[in-house]
Image (cartoon, rainbow, N blue to C red; front, side):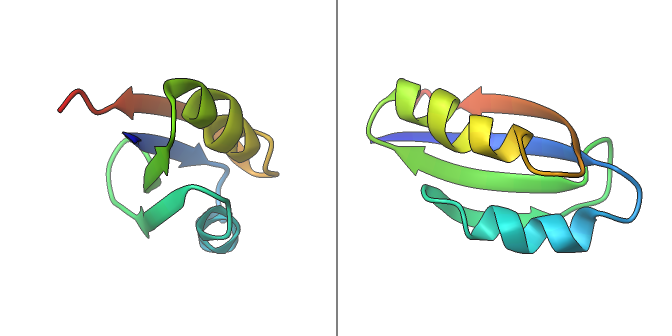
Amino acid sequence: MVRAFIMVKTAAGKSDALLNAIRGLDGVEEAHIVAGQYDIIVEAVGDEVYDLMHGVATEMRDLDGVADTKTYICLD
């Protein structure tokens, strides 16, 4: 099992609607609106790194209102 944290920057006023859409994606365990450089932080899991990068992360980037993402794969 591979775990990652994905930081999501949203368009102005889109965080609330995106939070619900992101929480509904397969592989997402937690998602929260946060203060700082990014607007939403997501904890996601997959069987392989490929599952995270080409599944959850790609689906997230395709959501309307997502301006940018950064994915951090856990090493431990």
